[in-house]
Image 1 (cartoon, rainbow, N blue to C red):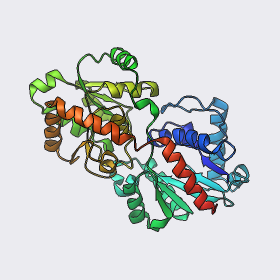
Image 2: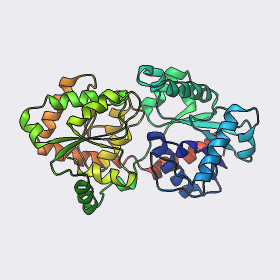
Image 3: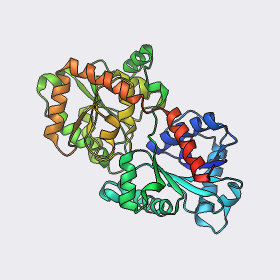
Length: 366
């Protein structure tokens, strides 16, 4: 069996999908070997993960994006040539015309473009519509959560048996990061006070304004003791939200090596997203042993289980009450931190890769 995975999202600025592909391909190759798992474009070696730039060198990046453009916008069957000999081609949201000779699969990360179009830019919506057409033609799909699988069945009209739920993983670095690295990152970012952390792209779906409103409404003693720290790049339609961040500690984009120790340094992690297909930041915070408050919608309850406080992401009052309850109880924070760490052990890339290889074997009939 030979699988070719579209890795072009690794060449552009991206967040969750890039995180998924980077670790997924790495662990698939560890489990099955590089000969069984190839990529388009060919990438035998990649740089350390960064969400702001390509993980390949300049020539590989330019060549890969040029090949993608030719494949998408010309009649030349380029991917048929480049994926010659593949049993399976696993597409991303960037591919418009996958090869015809290989069986077609893809990973469904979320369907917010279809379910909540008001939360996305026009370019994102166009990409989602194109991916929806591809997904309907696929021989099989991976969904990163059962919630996403059910959404795909309803929104795309895909037969349930064509979609396999395989949870994403959490990088090993988030499990027990060294205390020295945690202290170093805390000192480098000037985080002297205990802090509440939000980590994610600043965009409408992440619901940062509700978090700002809820934190501003906390009793003064809590606001004086705890600092609200927001980390992540500015996404689309973020101007008004970013303007409000001057009243809290806004760190902007955080390099990948700092993510785990920064997360572990927090007293509390809050993620009131309106929709997540999986929710990497929540799983990562749990792995680091940090207590979590998150939303009671989409895949977030599935990922959090009983190891977090769940709130209505449209209710400032519910989020405020959860913040007060958590910040006033060290025992509750300790209990949820321990429960979260145990829960996160269910989300390992080794398990995800093993189940994915079983999925590909089933698709090819092996």
